[in-house]
Length: 266
Image (cartoon, rainbow, N blue to C red; front, side):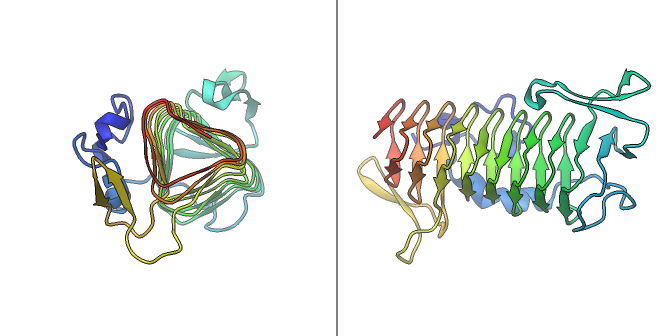
């Protein structure tokens, strides 16, 4: 019941190798550092992107090349729908990604997919892997070991560390994600906080099938299966597991443990 295959459809996730279908659903968090440390990251031109220094002008990433903004036109359409466009002399540079002036990249282990937008004021600490047509909004803080699939939103004033977002997962506004996994099409309401460290010492345990399971993790936030949603200003306690289609209502704190499919947490 608490396996990756029971929580997620991994058929189109670019990093499905991180997941073993029959393993416990929190196992990918154990393996995330090893996976990301072994990833082949692109080498961006440090003439344009200086380590830890805010960009002074927009930078374009296209087919492995780092381009300056001088002779290019940017059309800021809906990023997650593939409407971000970069043009040169009226011709579109297919798959080009845009890092806006004022964004900061810290470290060299950062990979941006095609059609990605990084907005002004975002801070990305390595390692980070961001999938195609994803959007990192103004003021986002990626603290390292952040892995996002396709069409994700890492939102305004949202802090993310050691977490995985599957395709179309969205943490759009004022959220905190620590040691967490968001499944396909998960949407976090504004102000959602996924707490990852309980007050008492020791590993986080999950009660399931009549017994407590030791996750072997001191820190564990929330694991939300495909299609879960949270309302504004909601909170999940450490070790909250929400099965497919579960909903956490606004201004509610979810208890740690397993919550069945399509449950409504009030």
